Image (tube, rainbow, N blue to C red; front, side, top):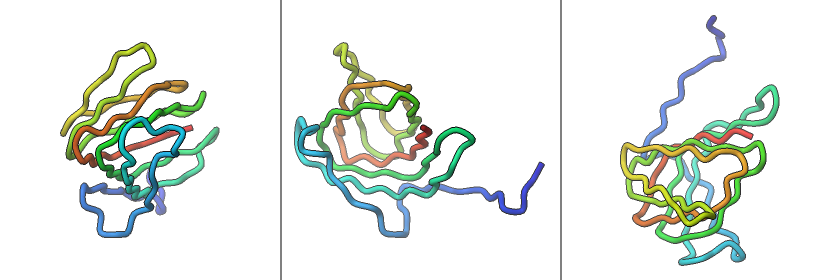
Length: 124
């Protein structure tokens, strides 16, 4: 079934609009103070929650992260490398063409090894 309001959305490593800028909160910082750029292209209600989708770019650094009990993220690296560390001491390293799923309740650290550009989809 097709809706007249349904449309495809293409994400690119080099968006042509201005991003939202931020840095990790000081209490979460472990290393560096990376500038983060976000081009959120989707911010939409779900039957139970919200979905966000877009492009995210970040300088090298490391900070603590915690997914909410209903929050989950799937991202794909376009440029650069990162590691996502879990609280048990393990990690996954992700590079160009690779994706990673972070489940609800995940806690750990996000480490940007090389200037990173990724696409993401977060639902909560």
